[in-house]
Length: 390
Image 1: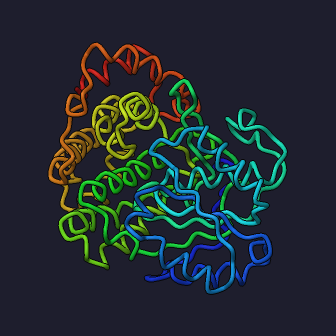
Image 2: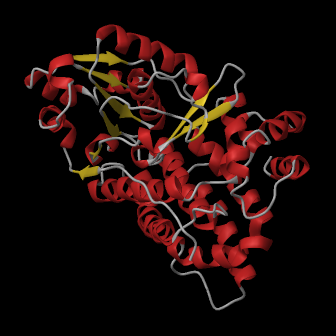
């Protein structure tokens, strides 16, 4: 067995209605929030829907002064992080709360880091380049998809529309608060896209060629797929089913723990330009390229795909060759996406053949991810995958 390191969030709390206890949680932490106040980082949709109301009321009840920054956008920009950081520093904030989807949590992570460490943002892009401390950090996911509450990664969009990652265990939060009630109002299409995103995390973590691929991540990936696959259809069709929502949120978190330590690969590398250039939600971007990346990889990791297949489709016939099981697995994933309302084909999001050279070129910049892929991906390979995904 290879040597490995497994990092995750220090405290994970799952409780229906737990957001209403956020004030109590912060009051019990040995942090400066009580004296200096907290910043809640979120997006306008969260505030409009009132999802943060109970959390803010609980903070007020505990007399924790809270500043709300609600300007986070999808595929968050570096400028958004810098704006939030400047406001937090000017107010002398003592704690950061990331409340929302992956974008809000990713912004909150880096704001906490920039407020606590004396480094410019540009110096943080890459792996383990952060030095110093961060402010106390609590993350509260409102979708079951990114797993950002347990990952040491924050993905930001730079001025060139290229996505870059800040990767350091320093940005793992002190507490991840999982409240499935916050996900009950998610529309079906968001439930579907974020759920498939979590499944991609598990699949890529299991097959990652990272030197840190480890038995803990592989076990978590399988457990995540068991939960996600068994509940995603019900969560999409009947969003008020609390049991399905709990299982999706837990499955997303387990997948997050898996890929946080055994990093994702070409699906994400090819999905990032789709999101950056065409403003396609991250989960949907992953879903649109998943099948063709898996077909490309199958010759090199068919046995691993075949091992995962029954965790997604328990009735799949595993008494065949691993290649046959893998091909069946891929086709079933395509059908699952369609059943969930995620129509396959990049053409459905406005991408044409003329866009492929730019997409392929930008995907090659994702070296941090491509190095983990089971099969080497060259620019011409990326172009063929995109074309097959149209």
